[in-house]
Image 1 (cartoon, rainbow, N blue to C red):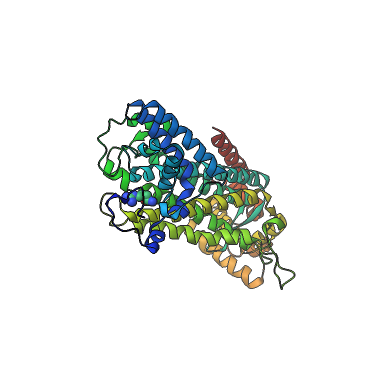
Image 2 (image 1 turned 90 degrees about the vertical axis):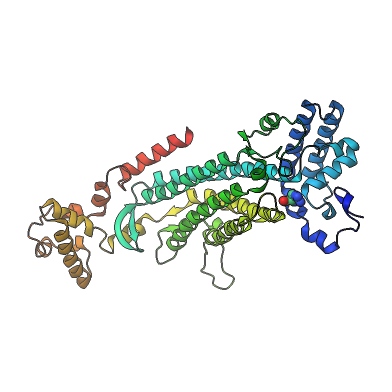
Length: 459
Ligand code: ARG
């Protein structure tokens, strides 16, 4: 038996292997609810323009309701022979309501149908992912505010650079995620254009009312070119590109959490519920959640490359290649959602070892730049001040002492203008408090940044 939905011109049935090879139902059934919504809108529109009569439309809508319930309850029987989600649903509809089911496909094609379904799916996914991102943002604000005064070493090249507040560091993470949320919203805006009505590639001779379907599906606008609308998956690429950036950011945070929770850093403790033990080393508490998130960055980056490569060189309009868009896309959705969810749970629960952070900041001459700035205040050109402090640091390294541990006499040997007040500058508290401008690390600025962010989040 050839496929009853398109078998008219075929004289032999599909090769069994080819049938499985070309089928997408095992993965595109995920878009079933979007496909049903798309069919509902299409059927109602066909009724409104008189292509279908009222009875057909009401039978179709009822049938689709039943199918939707069967799928939600796990009672729907998916068939590989019916290739994909679209044909499975249509065939079931015809089983249920007879010929009216066969009329649903009037004036449309699976090409505009699938292009519409995926857009609806990604739009829904972006809403769910953004909700997790928002939870994470709120958690970060809570953590940053709680530790606005905690001092830690700030690093460049992973070498001690200058003291910063932990709250400031967390707010750096917050900025990354905020831009990611913006990017997701941008992507949602650009994809919210309705392909339905483009039919296979050229449009349809039926008197369709695209404004009707556009409004019922909640799209912002109607696609302006049918060839483009059925074929391009740039919105999926854009979503995965955004996803890759989100994961890149999460991987950077993960790396820091892994480092900081090691015995050598000991800056933080992750609650046990986010860690696992070792089957052989009884002392181990492994930061599995951040490690796994860091690792999952690879698959999302891979999915982006898959989609770019999938789209590359495809001639207009639809090509079967595009069926391969779904698995990378769906896995990106799942990975982003779950990683953001894990982070949203974990970040506000991070326990901070403020004492260890402080001790670490005392090592590594974190206030050397402050001494140079002090000398600039005494009239030295910055380059000369840099040189003077470099000499003092070398002396400190030889002595095994920090700048703040040198006596005034010792410091004066490097520059006679140094006075007793230098010790205020050399303290960690003085250093962070002095960077008191928008975007600076001073505790007051961290609190202000948290307030601004809260107001933006709730606006
Ligand atoms: N399963 C197909 C896909 O994902 C649906 C569109 C099929 N269109 C076609 N002309 N064969 O792309």
